[in-house]
Length: 439
Image (tube, rainbow, N blue to C red):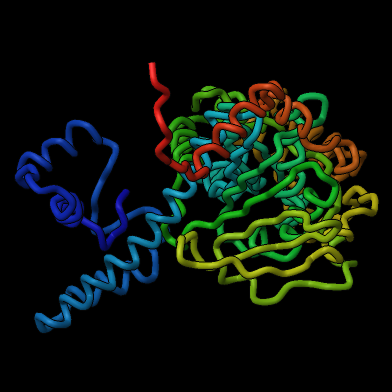
């Protein structure tokens, strides 16, 4: 779906301005319709609307002078240009990871709207079950572009919706990507703008700890413009929503089966029963961050033995990175994490209410005896805590330095020959006359 302030007419104008002999508008529309049928332009969208796009659209509907309209169009072009540059940077990271997965790892992570994954889910509800309790089963999706893999994690209100979900899911994906627990040197991470999940000092410290431990040589964290974040992971969620839209899904096991059937490549699915509490480690750090809500580009790397976080507002070439030492924050993750062992009140209340309503679900015929028995076991698991199966940070080895360098190392004699050739290109020759020897 195109931004609400951007139309097919705007697309054509941008295309025509870059070509000396452009197609006519009619043929351009036909090409868009035939070759890009998935691209839609509408005055309204089901996604959260960008505030600036909405303001521009509403302003254009008013009674404006010619000068005001020209100024508004210029502001709109600047706004859309910045969001396009940020998106193209993300596409560049995907391309690098796909072409060289031994050197780059590109990951995008996001959470799905839980409205369609509240269980039990029925295609239609009658008076007997419409008021009964349904348990929230949150969905977190991850795409690893270089490996061509997709992951879907489900979890309930047994856990708070915070950065612990993000960190544990990432560690599970790292474990799947790594060979012998070793990862490529560079990580590109694209995340949603949610402050409680991703855009916070805890995630910054966690990513800093990845380079401090040398799990990665460099980590880049990027955020798209608010209201313009609808990317390939949202497409996965869309396919899942369409697939399960009219289905009866009464257990999380069935939910996982249908998620795997809804999307290609088939997602690796897992229900998170226990998590490591990395958030508690970050809260013990002597430092936090302030002012990190505005930048959209972050880079983490080691400078000698210090963790440096570089940041800038947008991935514009003329913009320079500013730097900040976050070593103390990254070192907070050196301590061993404890498993999460406390449940938020929201989760406890939901599980208790579901336990009370379970006989009612059976009486109204919405759950069979077997399904009700499954729910009893499921609720018992949600009320108890155990040892997480997610690998911890200290279980990973250093990034693949030797392997990646060996793959790109040429024989010394060839390197020396090339070096002498390049050096000769800068030499200055001297031409002089000499007497010719008589024959």
